[in-house]
Image (cartoon, rainbow, N blue to C red; front, top):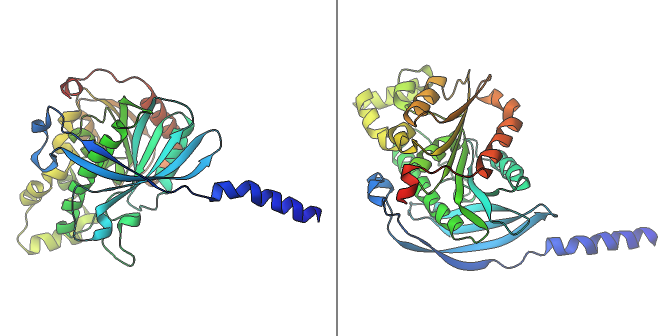
Length: 333
């Protein structure tokens, strides 16, 4: 009987955590900044209203609460599932206002890295919004083989543009939150996520802080004659493609093209000296074009960077918490 009573007591204690409140529906607005005309044309947006759904998922008692967030993508792809943006919001306990950052996934896209990052940030007083990129997670139809990055440029290039516009909307949602310090909103990404964070941060200057972990730019020149890309390049050239043509096609989607917009911004770059995926010279080009912001080099390969993740997480949290310096572009917005 004592065992049964103890079991019932535990069940009674757990029950409130298992009862999820109904989603809360609300609206928020995206408004272009006064310097919208300076944004590359494919990434410009008009004034729009969005309906979002927010639902409490779980909490780490006394530390943070996690909410799910969904809102419609401003881009309509051919797959219905991909047209709803899914995110998880890690909100620290307390009144705020908190610094906040969007967190983006790696190429594998199983959510492990951004959830780990979001947990660490929330434990250190930073609200973290893990946003799933196009064709990842719930945005990918069950059984579908579609990928955000693939040799199929008719999917890949529009997906990169969709990611940037989705994240501009995510920025507007964060700015609408009373608990968020709108002067300290950032965007953070690792590997694939770093390429999107660099590109989106350059486009949307209301991301006051940009973190680029294992990222770079100048992809066509870096990969065109690299053995890793031989199959793709051979197929491209078989239909008349050239390196100059590839540069032209990819330029709007390469962070290096827009990196000058990061000059004077609060940017943190972390990279591997022996990175075999995002070569060090790719990182150096991005760093130089962005005005030589703070950069940290780790003695590691791309995948070996996991050894330095604790240090990187601490640096990201500190970067998000410090006040933003005034920048030329920020004052325009």
